[in-house]
Amino acid sequence: MKAAITTTARYVPERIMTNFDLEKMVETSDEWIQTRTGIAERHVVEKGQTSSFMATKVAKILLHKSKTSPKDIDLIIIATVTPDMLFPATAALVQDNIGAHKAWGFDLSGACTGFLYALETGRLLVESGKYNKVIVIGVDTMSSILDYTDRNTCVLFGDGAGGVLLESSKKENGVMDSILFLDGSGGKYLHMPAGGSLLPASHDTVDKKLHYLKQEGKTVFKFAVKKMADVCSEILERNGMTSEKIKLFIPHQANKRIIDAAAQRCGFTENQVLININKYGNTTAGTIPIGLDEAVEDGIIQNGDLILLSAFGAGFSWGSMLLRWGVN
Image (tube, rainbow, N blue to C red):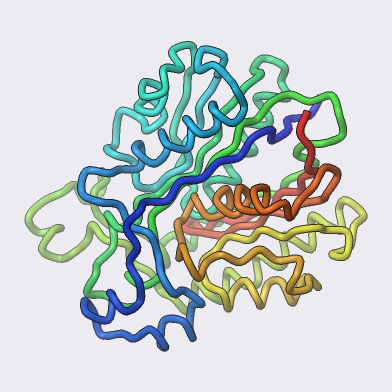
């Protein structure tokens, strides 16, 4: 028995923040941002909209498209680093919002690799035979932890959510393999210092802007290019495949230069690589499921196609996952 993705969905806020909008907020320019990142615009939430708000939108779309009753959902896994609050879990809020009262669930904090971590967890639980229908969502409200006076970080991120419905399958479609890594020695290069038990919120932490994302960009860039390429090559080799066999490579959308460098090292052509960072920016745990839903909607992938997912993020965390596409 395999766990197969039978339905995909995405949601991004209506409000769009362009590079020209950022020019009015911080010392930057559209040319500077596009040249270094490939980003032209990103979506950001309105006041009062949260990660649970976006995740609920995705969950409802999944239920509608799959014609599934909320009472048939067994489990909800939410990958996020920007929950509405530390507790209860975003999964609990979503469960209540959609009426999936028989489901249990939890949040998973894996940063930009979070969706792959959550998808791996969900698929193993489905393959155990105990759970039949599992919702897995990657969502982040990055605008809530960005310092809009820091041009090195605020231009990179956007808000958004994407998700899938996992179901058991006796066919050959589904998750074929995965390789996931974590190296905690890299944690200091990409993190949010305050807000946890180490530095609880105080006047001092707020004054020092410690509740915002902090990043050492050059270190993260070098790590991302090498590790994403390495793990993609490893999973292909382990499954006796070459890049030519892959119909679509969906990488984490952090920076177009990172995507291009990793794709080139793996031997992917331009037509094999999904890139949407230009219109969404980096939505953290949302990037891969948003891209997957776009590919399905646009008819890019068909039954039997091989799909390769790959991500890297804070932790440092990174990994890849190989799918054979096909609905039951």
